[in-house]
Length: 210
Image (cartoon, rainbow, N blue to C red):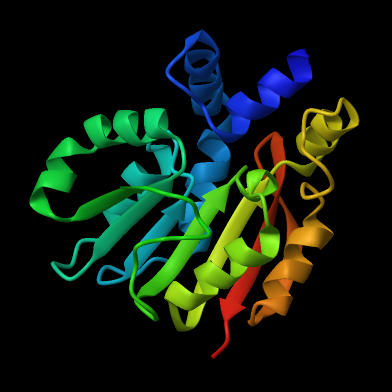
């Protein structure tokens, strides 16, 4: 029972004690993954950048600092109404200026035009998508040809949670995610081990081929 409740809060935090605790856990655990996903994307000042599952907005804040050109635009999507509201408050000035746009939606149904996004990043996100192929196909649709997506995770932690049946099904496995990316039109899909001081993590890269 506890595992089922934790899965729901990890994948879709709600305005509750459990959701609050999970959101604070994200701040502690995800900052390295968020910062590195942003850096590995090689964001240019005039890019249009999309974060999937933005949570409280850690990655959004880092990416926004790099979009110094007036044309630079940052988009965030999250299926959790609670996370959407929290991030909207955190980013309210940039949202008001039009620099940042946030959507409360499913990754498999984003209100974005075709071929409009240069870079995509996300961390600790894909394992909670109900359908990896649908999610990957939708991301590929909105990305410009040659656009880069970076996914970061700590595989050892994810595998430990999966062993306790906290992760749903087999979607947590990088192989399943990478297969969905290739089947959806992404190329140069690869995973590499990375190290930052005492923290090791994995980065998965994919290029939108069209």
